[in-house]
Length: 305
Image (cartoon, rainbow, N blue to C red; front, side):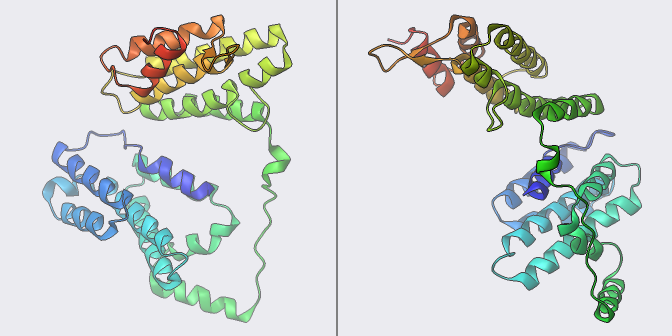
């Protein structure tokens, strides 16, 4: 599961060191649309065709990266039904990523892939080995394992030994310092928001502080949540931004986080300290009267007739 999340994170981040030709980017976006709905061969056909164009050759690292992603998704698609095909597609994915790493050592995609391979756990050891060199070499390595019975290292990376929401906050802050890209920073802040706002099972954050009724703690946590919301909003360029709806969502969630059912009513009783977050929802969706968060924000604020 961790590997899937990591690949998803890589997939939707754009390389930053050079602007991609508009026509090439449109083809890459089309390929992403295809492989995101399991039309893997359509996606790969588009990408391979781009590798043969002069414009595409200038962005070979980006194209091969997505070729790898398409094959990687394809391998997961067949994992339970056809292990032979799953292994073959996994080998294709790792092969494409290996080309990116070897031919474009300074590429942003290479940096991201290297981070992926550094973080792969022991369950991915055999698969990572498959992508290292040519098929013949892989076969020879596999044959060598017939002579002995290896047990792969236990890296002692058990989650329960380090599970601490406060450590997660430190980690997110390090990631925020590491990246300049607004989309990446927004996604990091969104996860940080869910943690600090209390949308977790770790009994951590605003919602859980409210339950314990410690006013000073609650006020501090509320300020932290609002600070994160402000940072998120500063990264959004406008309603056309890919994460604009997510911003509306988090303001809405913050507005109702401390709400309770009103006496003898199906309506929510909104905490006055959080009311301004619902008002922010109305402000952000002023030109979108059918926005679902706007409709409910109006309802809870008593402005919907």
